[in-house]
Image 1 (spheres, rainbow, N blue to C red):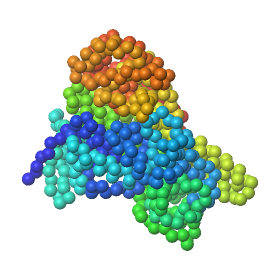
Image 2 (image 1 turned 60 degrees about the horizontal axis):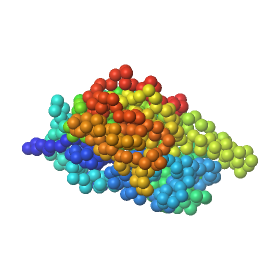
Image 3 (image 1 turned 180 degrees about the vertical axis):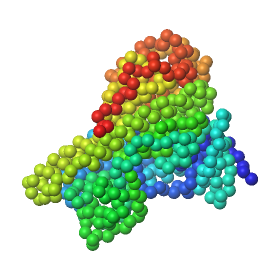
Image 4 (image 1 turned 90 degrees about the horizontal axis):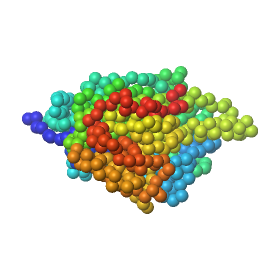
Amino acid sequence: MNSIMETDVVIVGGGPVGLSAAMDLDSRGITSVVIESRQYLEAPNVKCNHVASRTMERFRQFGVADAVRAAGLPADYPQDIAFRTTMAGIEFGRIPIPSAAGRRADPVGPDAQWATPEPPHRVNQKFLEPILMAHTASLPLVTLLNETRYVDVEPDERGVSVRIADRDGTERTVRGKFLIGADGGRSVIRKKIGSSFHGDPVLQRVQSTCIRAPHLYAEMKGERAWAYYTFNPRRNGHVYAIDGVETFLVHNYLAAEEGEGDGVDRDAAIRTILGVDDSFDYDVLSTEDWVARRLVADSFRQGRIFIAGDAAHLWVPYAGFGMNAGIADVLNLTWTLGAYLDGWGDEGILDTYEAERLPITDQVSRFAMGHQRKIAQGEVPTEIEDASAAGEAARARLGRLAYDLNVQQFAAAGLNFGYSYSRSPIIEYDAESAPDYTMGTYIPSTVPGCRAPHFWLADDVSLYDMLGRGYTILSLGDASELGGLLDAAAVAGMPLTVVDVDPSRVPETYRHRFVIVRDDQHVAWRGDQAPGDPNALIDRLRGRIPLSASTVPANEVGAAVGETT
């Protein structure tokens, strides 16, 4: 007998994207069922070694940031990126990134002074995902169905009927109001809604091998690092420390003439990257070869079905921005789903997700592709390993180039904080355009659509800690002027929290007396006085007013620059 479960949102895929969606929905009083084929707490293969600052900020809201920061490498292990001829060879450059313990002391590095309550953290997904899954399973409004397979979905005007199968093949149905497909790059949900990938299907091929090498550190000189980029005329690679003890992930980047790598000796390539001979012992734990791509789906939604994460986009996984962009996707979606299901968001608010995230996804994919091409085009000097003046000069030159290029991805302030939503139906734009940004740089701004610049309201109290569900108005002036706006919000049932702000604590980027911030940290409106038509503004924020040309800012896509070639 095919039994039926009832829920608000069905989530297909229990990776970081799907679990983040469930956590956020639970915090909004929305029920969800997560469909995941793997066993409970089963760790994935090693992948994605970086949790971005924006993601950590949201994990802070969910109450898991401290657990995530305590996971992975030992607390005092440096999260630096080192440039070497081989792992056991000569170091010729380094990007300093604080250890987890160093973040709490006197951090030094290109991301050490970012305006954020939660700096980034290096932790492999094999450690991250079980933390998120255990937390999600503990939430009262989430049903986590492990060892369960998605079969099919039948949408209608009022919701979705999702057929699933247990481990023994027994089928049942989950009835939900919406479905989120977070089911990876081979997404069956993407295919179900008729969405297709477009872009660059092959940029580079990579042999990826996870190894256990307990004696590797003994072969190396100098300080340890989280990541090692190795350059020599024979083979270039990237190596990541997984546990800081004996486990490493080795990426062997294949040359164009090596094709799909069938003729490449994996063991010989690993030894060349490590800089060890045949007498060195290591064990292969897993292999997962992959192709660097730039692919973006042409649609993120059909009716009540949405896709997010790798289901919606695939690109070169530099700096972990595949997973982190996926989490940004789905949390953009879940806050609007929460508004709609709570009754105060109009149906038009559901158009926000694709209108906001698809352009940003395209921008980030081009950043990643541009970065990959610059790395692939670099030539390694033949004298790089020589113990000579020419070798030393070559290492110094390549060290500077490697630092300048890679600090952009490993301290990606622009990708974290610089993007803005420029064609959103629920943002009230003004005459000012959002500043341009690059992968590594941005200008903090309160232009509507931008991330509200962070500041501390009090010791250990972040601005983001005080954002209410829905919308928050930051008052740098006399809040008594806001009575009409608050009344209009109350009549519409729209949550609008007032936070009085001490002007002495506010960065100079806050040039207006009132700023409305969404609970996903983006600015929705600003002004020096209460709006003349408060009902119209509330209608805009609720998604009742369609986007028109007159409401789009002058600089339509506030502008990712300098990384697309």
